[in-house]
Image (cartoon, rainbow, N blue to C red; front, side, top):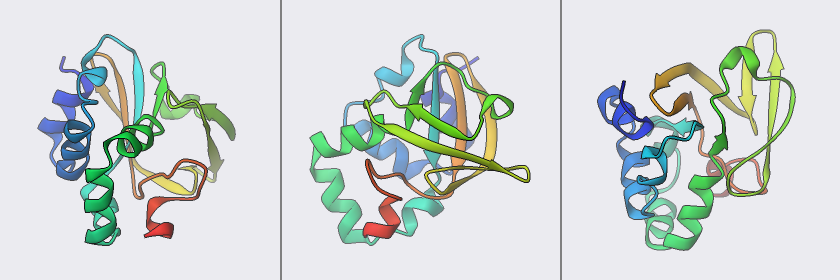
Length: 141
C-alpha cells in the first residue's frame, strides 16, 4: 500500500494540494509512518480561491506549512469514527467536525470522498480548503 502522498498522486484531483505540500516541504512528513488523517482539499476546492490569493500563499512557505498542518490530525480516523466536536490538528489548533444526517463537515467543508486508505493513514477529500482560526480559505480570498 502507498503512503498518503503517493496515494494522492495516484488518485488524481490533488494537483494543487500536492504542489502546496511540495512548496512547503511537507511531503516528507506525510510519507512517514504516521498514522495521519489528511483532510485533503480537491483541485475544485482550490479553484474557488482567487489565483492571486493562492499564489501569494504558495510564496509564503511558513504560512503555507501552517495551513497544511491544519489539514492533518494524528491517527487514522475513519469517517465512522468522526463525531460532532473538535479535533486537534498537528498544527496545534482545533478543527470542528459536524455530523448531521450522514453528512460530515470539517469547519464547514464537506467530506465528499471519505476513507481513502494509505499505508500511513487515511485521506478524506473535502470541498473547501481550511484556514487556521477561520471558516475556510475561500471565505477569505
